[in-house]
Length: 467
Image (cartoon, rainbow, N blue to C red; front, top):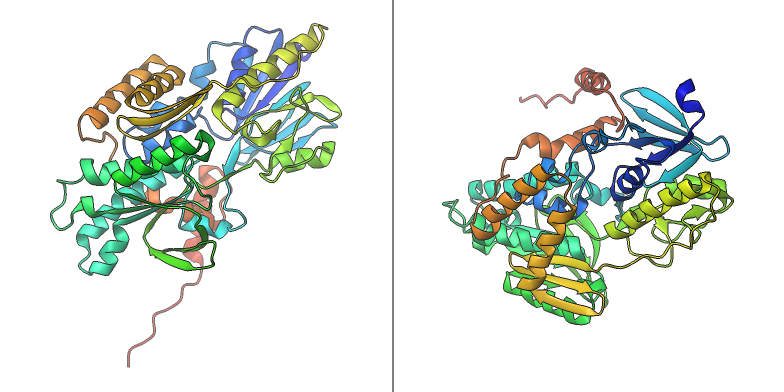
């Protein structure tokens, strides 16, 4: 910190998602200095990730650069960094990026580090069943889904071809339903005239969930209606089925009676669960706060931690009054925490406890079909789909992103095309290679190159000699 900044209250925000971004923008005119630390350089509009994964939108349209969003606010500095440690006694945040370690002191801290995919203790599933929480996830899934049709076209063995043309989606929440619906749209509308050896309309899409309903958060009636719509789209809906194994040739599920069924497939999408950031564990150990079953830290009514009114935890990694892990909660908590900090600096009385105002939930099933839950109203169909379009365009940041998104939606929903069907082998295999080489997320390009050089020098097994 420079002498110029030393006398001002310093707020550190971890995470550039909805919670972190709304908190930063709320502080843009406050008499404070803000440092926003994020492991990525963009603000991700996560509800539309499935459209990147299925070729409707590009990653740039749903993930504008954080620096561009905040560039007009002179009191806000953005730093790239993967936060590894928060010391609540010393009031410092330690982050890493490109081999550089940065220690940032704070007066107030807002932790909005989000959540990650949960495999419920079976992390080995990730190799063959990617989740959908990041741009990397979406691009990998796009490569896997579109490549499956290409490999099916090349395959002459009918059993293996059927594996390529089978797509399994685990989790019947909003993300799973949206993914299953869009894969069906790809197979039945977008790609049906593009191949000569395969009939893409015969692709099999299986939606699996361990619970007994689709879109459980939307109520029984809407959930049942969504299940019927999915079945009309050709999606097999398997409920009360728990995934017990996953490999490169498929997955096995088990029903309540213990009967196991193997689903041969080369493409699995994991949309079954999330867990709070690992930073929650460190904060809980230091403050005595409790953790819930979803690895989320339990916060007080003002979103702060016990004994540390200067530390606020918001969004997907906090637990309070069973509020859902949705964008609206993070947005409202981001604004609330920012106001609390400003009021505290001014010596004003504390705000009332945080209360989430539920503006409703929505999920698309396919083009022209969606479900919506707004207050006491529960409805589906075309009206819900139009409302979904309007709200999602409203929350997209930037005129350019809104315009291009509307254009691509017109191409995909009115026509049959998909603007983003480009895939590369690197999209599909790069993350597995990074994991195999044990390259950390904060590695610099030079460190990555060094790891590959070491791979080249490792002894390789030699082929057996022929006699």
